[in-house]
Image (cartoon, rainbow, N blue to C red; front, side, top):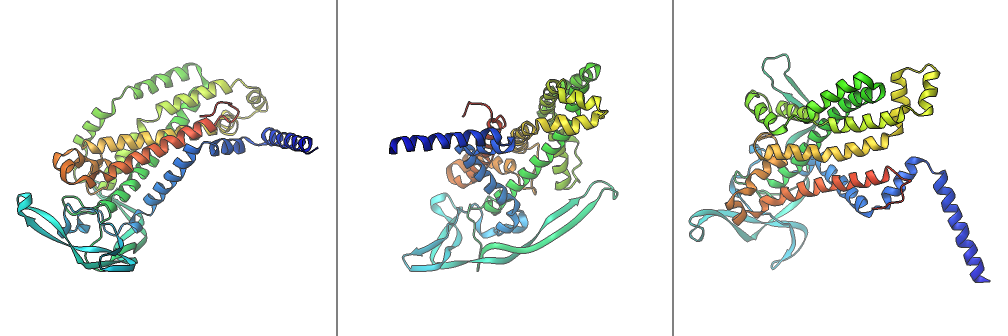
Length: 398
């Protein structure tokens, strides 16, 4: 009796699951399919953490990531890890040790950092420090017409600091700048560069791909020739020419905007081709013909009927395009053609890791490299998960 009642209960559960599956909306199916991918879910949490670190980078950074925030007494200093206890006893407040900078005969009279274990420096939270603004535009272009200086939401409170001296969780570089603060600001720079580049690429791809796919004919041929011409433009010579002709008096923000815009201007052809392919296959459907017979304009049909039919695919393509923008910006900055100081960029920070002295003595220079790898891989895994979830009726699970 128990066996048959259990079997009947299992059958009822299976029937409820089937009903829930066939009555669920496409959005619900996509969310369920994405949640079943554990790798994508974990990558999503990691990516969320990285984005939060970038958004609140100024608040989390104890020191300014420029020469104004350098620590002259801790140049090329190793990471300082807060402690709660040592041979002198336990402390409820985390602390680090004081340091001294001196020359040593063991290192051919090179400056070295020595630790004073009797000098405890305690951490304090929500301390006052350098001033920062969450909304800041400072463009200094030639002439006075395009100059712009806007600041809003200005604060000087930081998450942590020490009572005296400095604390450098990731160490410092050769000029004494805090690598932890620079890494967080570099993540924010990569986010802003990727968002701006993807936005420009998305708008261009949506307009060009939509017109090409909906109208077809000679319009499609001309736009496809233009798309192929853009795809053949090599980015490296383009940025080499750009680096040679950019005025040296331009501000770092203006250079950042120009580089991000060019990344978007050369990154739209792939997405435009995918939009065109979807429109070519959808424009002959019955609901499009019904809208045309009702007198709907072409703009209305594209905007209200065709584009929503594959919005999920567009979102996936944008997620896949984002790490491409970040990698291209980082590669250009790494070879000196992209963003340079005073802008904190992952590419500019990785310029020093190829030096032999860094490989032998200053391994903490590789910490930004780890953040870059995790950042890009998180976007890739999330993009793969969304790509699989965008087709919830597929039976293949990866």
